[in-house]
Length: 248
Ligand SMILES: Nc1nc2c(ncn2[C@@H]2O[C@H](COP(=O)(O)OP(=O)(O)O)[C@@H](O)[C@H]2O)c(=O)[nH]1
Ligand SMILES: [Mg+2]
Image (cartoon, rainbow, N blue to C red; front, side, top):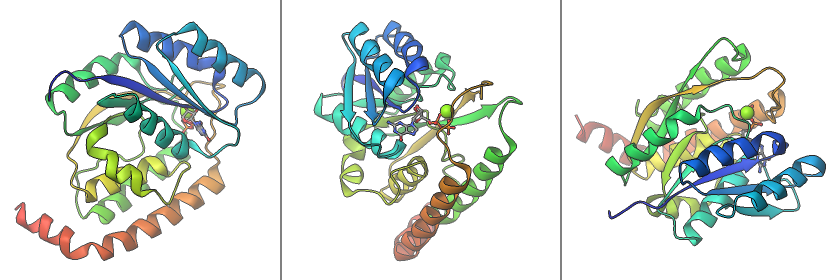
């Protein structure tokens, strides 16, 4: 592949206050941002519009009704394809991801232009125990759903997508357009045979930070997504088993 054309896709909901710093840091690295807003109101909406005006290379994609994080990421990735980018870095708007990893991820994408470069989160003590537990359960089910250990973490929202390679999976649609999307897309890309490379990324949970993750509803929705993906694995069982054993 010739030179990569990289942008960032940032889903933003109620994080208008923090997204400016993320966009600024990315723009200093010459990475334009695609901000996806679905249903932000008030100060958050105003801040988004202001950030988009302050950074001429950024693009703001807006929808009037909230569709969920997954919906926003999908729309951002489709916009990135439309604008001719080859790769998109998905990153959170609230500053939880350590931006010092960005240049390494860009280098990794250059080395593996057809692969997905994904974050393997490393936490400090600020991580809520309930989120850690959920992650362990999810990562166990992802092993079952892919019949492999190739996805050590499916929940980190810091990852670089090779846009041409993911286009067909993206267009097929998803079961979960909310918080389970990050998991589902990796499982589906694994089924589609996309290679994945994992590298550590520091993730913090700053005190007073806003989270849109709803403990009960989102965990229930993620459980439903795993059930759906489990049956998806069963349908693909012969092919996945063949792939598993032919690699040995
Ligand atoms: N556009 C959009 N972005 C969302 C939505 N839900 C979460 N996000 C964004 O997705 C990223 C992660 O969400 P966050 O609420 O921080 O969840 P947490 O980090 O898992 O607790 C942040 O950039 C949010 O602004 C949503 O419904 N729509
Ligand atoms: Mg967050």
